[in-house]
Length: 139
Figure 1 (cartoon, one colour):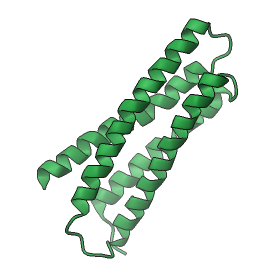
Figure 2: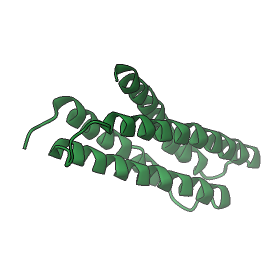
Figure 3: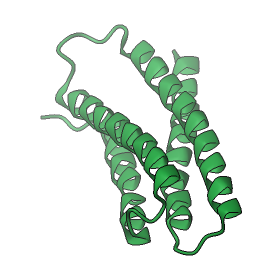
């Protein structure tokens, strides 16, 4: 089980790296007056990073579900909250995928500050998920 836990953590780091960097690319992509070449470069970078990030997310979820084998149901409250946060993170991830399409079609649709704020969301998820997994608060 320690190997599974290690793989879960490795792919979680991969997933979060992408979730942290993708909105940062959006900030640059949404800057006014970018050349066509720059717009195409950002679109390609975002698409490739999203693929890698998605693979990290899928493998994180896969190994996380593997770790759930053997838990008695219902799981403790801390785990229920953690799984709810992971579901929220998956929704955030899917939203980033939609933003990639929006940026490709209309780069200036949202101001760069929108993406700067969006860039802070995974930090909140990370802190909450790690604290729940490590501290495992009771009741």
